Length: 349
Length: 203
Image (cartoon, rainbow over all chains, first blue to last red; front, side):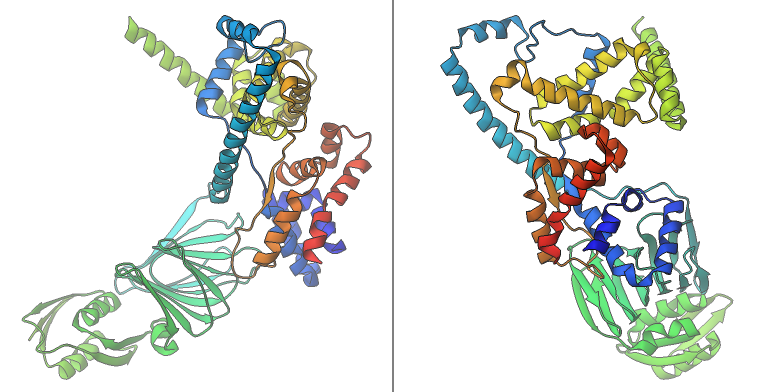
């Protein structure tokens, strides 16, 4: 408790929680490095400071304009300091009222004030809890891959991102605020640099995956998003249905935007993460999935004549193999002929 | 004729906008002295920048919107009138807050509002909530509810100091001034005492 009070009565600590800048970030991260045993106190103190809120009633634009007009025209109010009854018509009403009636009016008025007060409290509570954190304007960087390309990159905080083909990520030049926001399209594997004070947050369509320092894979293609956790702990928040799930290592969350269904299950580490090692994996994939997989992996376009004789259910792996080898193997299994013409392949059934 | 007028107005408003962008870059002390020197666009900038927070701040002492509105209006009329006689400041918001607090409290005790007996309508209506991450948080939902309950039971002066320290991030010196303490130590003591609300929930 005393240790907590030490932070909670330090104006510089409050400033760091409310309006962090580089200098404060540097100071407090050094402080934590020097006092690693105090990290939980710091976190608790931060939660307390940011949890405190007040019900504020904001003025409407009309009030703001009206008051400015009054000020600029310097409308002088009545000498008696009477603020409410300042038009002559009100004054007449005023004189008609006896003290008794006055009291009645106050009762009515206080009921009205109470009702308005309550609705304003609910309203401001609502607004308050929905208020988005103020984000500073920071330059955004974007990295993307075309079909057939893969890319490794390092983010400003030291997080390593492996971007699969036909994917892109966007992130700020500098992670200044309270979190580390990243946007992902397509598939990527993240090894998040540990920083318990700045959650790492990946937004991919409707899913927001939050981690403090872990490694996970996100695949967001064809309206199906999957988050597969390798180490550590992540929280996956669904912006569409407001659901929140915590994943354990070895678990994968799969969300279908079309059916709006979320499933959590175990995943096969080898097949989900093999792409990072240049291993092309198909596991129980149908014809369309195999075609798309090949197109993305090798950066080619595949046409076909006729249709597969039967439903494909292909499970096979290729370790850093050439397109020729892969095609000839699949053609043998699924029984088709094909022609290769530079970057265009035609499959014939 | 009308069109011409409109054009002139547009020109004026665009030059005003440019000016207000200039003020964005200036320090409080510089804006304040421009205002004191009679610069009307500095006055408008100050008004536009601080009106909303002044209105919200006044509302913490008094739920009567009209009273707050009038007090803010009087405050701006007054400083505009006596601009050359005002002292300097490097924190305009704090300067205005101090003055508005005095006005609102005075207004509650005088004239029409006295009859409404709003003296105790000193709300600083506070709430404790938790919108942070589910993972790695120190406070359980149960603790958050306890904290919310105990923070709401604090007496008004303690809620007021919590507002200044945690919401406005004022320094002890500023809190001393705005709450009328004779020394900084008293402000510190009140804050320590206000933090009692944590004890029942966290121990």
